[in-house]
Length: 179
Image 1 (tube, rainbow, N blue to C red):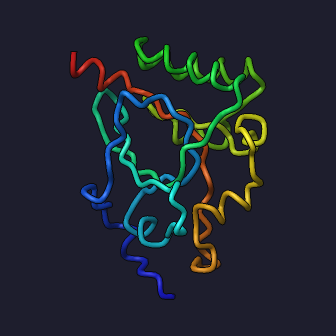
Image 2: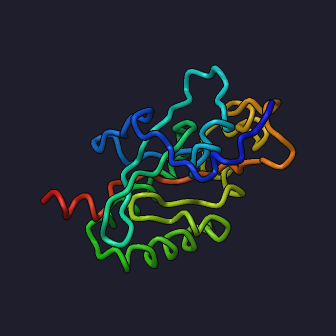
């Protein structure tokens, strides 16, 4: 397989992605955050019926932007459902405060987003992947999830995408722009 490295500078074709319906949020998502066409072309899903390609509308600096995701929705354990509800309730507070509150919520439950903090957006709340066994029902191993979502044999040695786990919620910017 050849890799067109020029696709790194090419935007994703948003028309290929289905926006997630806001009434179905919040959800726990496990998969990949696609940043460009290179990711889109090379993170190829298996034939698994559970794999979705979605555009999730998030807030960044008061404006709205789609975040493109490829992966699956997973069922959290009951304890984590309460955390998801707590995070989701915070959507009506000031965006600058919501991030601090999220970090406090995670630490209160011995969870972190230290390795995924760069992905933290209004509406997208990452959890470090080391915690998946403690938050997902019937959890598989990291490698098993990768093989469920991704055709690994098509990847080059220099391109090894990292699995991400995050809470998808309604974003403040969307709520306030539409009220």
